[in-house]
Image (tube, rainbow, N blue to C red):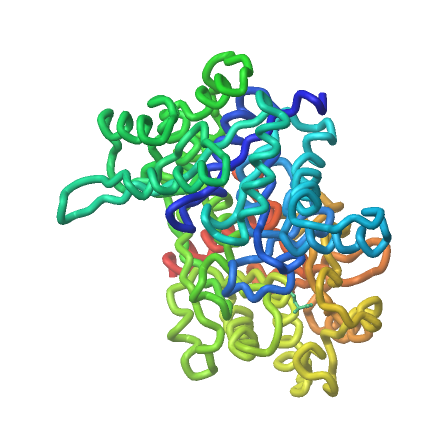
Length: 541
Ligand code: GLN
């Protein structure tokens, strides 16, 4: 089927942050619901090889795939919408493109030719776009191009799109996302930025087929006709994308605007009628009409930029809906927590989640939050560094090992209860060298986590260098902290739980990467359930 794969390119104009990822994921959802196999890919124009080494303040969370790729957070949206795993091939950066071209040059593969942006870099980009198409798994590949048209760094990508349009004519389609701002003083929606942005596209040889216009107000017929005329697209191909309350409404909004129908028509694909999207709509109904509410404290150090915890926040949307419950996240800065203010800062919470992270900033605040949750019987979920903090806290305050720490924070510490993994000790490069991707884990019968999953064998994604130091396992277990999940091959402790606590689970892996609308994550569902139960008990007392 590879020669018939259709390619849809999604570009952005006027400004960044218009939500290309959500539009791409929504369109993909609609096409998938019509029976097509669809995947989405993100091309990022920065020079980092991947976002693994980026500070979350730069681009938000680093998302991790089953095969261990460290990727842009948009891939999380793709998986959450489509419920189909992505892989290494779904995220490509300029750094990676250049790296492979330069490697080829060093191997002499260009046979003495001068290596140039056109054709060598653009060939590599086109190759990366078509890897997914040629896999034979997908009828449609949607490629989202990061950045905004007109950026110097996006140029080779737009040029590659131009070449693909030329080479594969009927197989390709371009959707351009723009902004139609409302000028309050004039009381009008303005189309000029959209006109200019399409003009910039045409200057580099690409005429968009469809315009998705982000707007705070309805685009009436006359505005649509005006945009169509000035931008060389048909009026039906001017799609309004009004601000939505939830990203999960966008597929329905796009369906109402007939985006999928226009796409099918332009790609020459048969239109077999509207998809029902029943499960999706059921989820939306539960999300929009919750019967209960819990408040969960999310303790992290990047909370000024909530995108740093995107997958966690979305997992609460899914698991909240599954429990017919609104999850109100209270964002708590770990750097601001200490013994004196912890009760005040964490008051009226129904559960506490201590977030993943790296380095020493804010770590003592996280440990203080764990202590409070453990001592007050508040449902607790620790993820990755959050689990490691739970181990450190237990060592210090229950085992009485005052000097317990992680060697990530204190290289030479007396009780290294969290220590660098053996296989990490010889590694010096930081990029792509953590323990990454999916690994098996075996859960202990009767544990909270086994109950949440309803099964013993699970697979979850990882992103860490440090681990529970098994040398001390016996000390922990005989004092009430149990290892309730382990890697079946290495024995690495993946999950810890505290006995005699309503619900206290620390996971070395990242459950948030696998939660989707159609498959809300069992561990989050279990956590929200525990928070609901805790709330009821508090109210009853
Ligand atoms: N910094 C810790 C480690 O590398 C935890 C990583 C994380 O939270 N993702 O092991």
